[in-house]
Amino acid sequence: MADILFKFNIKKIKIGSIENSSSLNIGKNMLKEFDSMSKTNQGLGKISGDKNEFPRNYNCVKDPDEVDMLYEKDDLKNKRFINRGE
Image 1 (cartoon, rainbow, N blue to C red):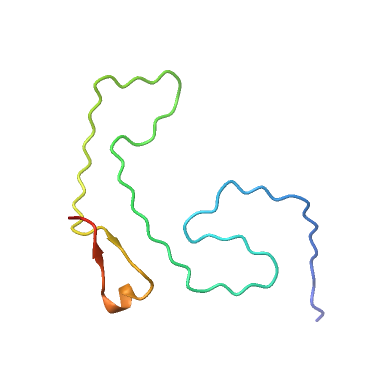
Image 2: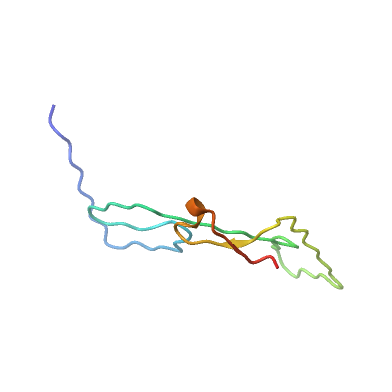
């Protein structure tokens, strides 16, 4: 059975954002060791609509994590962490 090849001609690609461990690759690529770590704490969440008002608004975020950390490539293997929670 013969191989089927497809050819695409793309004139323009519009990318809104590339985040975390995402990438745009063209041609022959070998990707490895992609890492991503993120944390978000939100007190109010997302607000949409028109003419929103929040008078005397108060938000409290309870974050029970004991450690927020930065890490480098070998830190997880060697269990070396930088404590940012203090």
